[in-house]
Length: 138
Image (cartoon, rainbow, N blue to C red; front, side, top):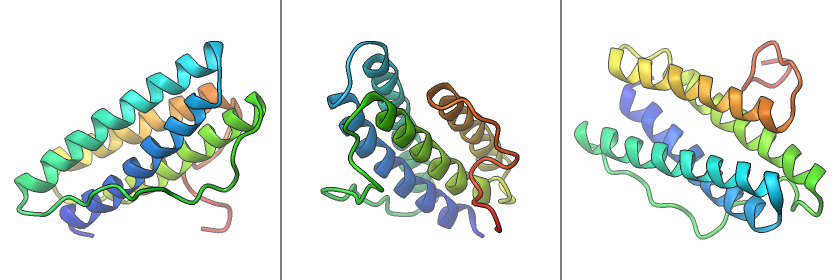
């Protein structure tokens, strides 16, 4: 995978994460809302970094969709934390491919993004996954 292709895929994941965390924060309160807001801000910052990296490589960053299909709409704090963990798992999967690119700066940023998303996922839904970001059987 070229760095540019991987960056575009990661950007799409970040757009979806920003959307999902906006919904999660809006449907939460207290500590959960604070955590979701921090995650929203982290994904916005990463999205902006990716847009810059794509532009620097001559690419054209995609714009966010008006909405994204989520596996479910959270109706409780438990569902919101489960959705947040699923979002982070999806972001992790997008960056895992990018970790294999030949461009060292991109590889390093991708590895950092994987680490950050796994930490956030664990914070929302602490369970051990042998290979975060990969579905069983992949």
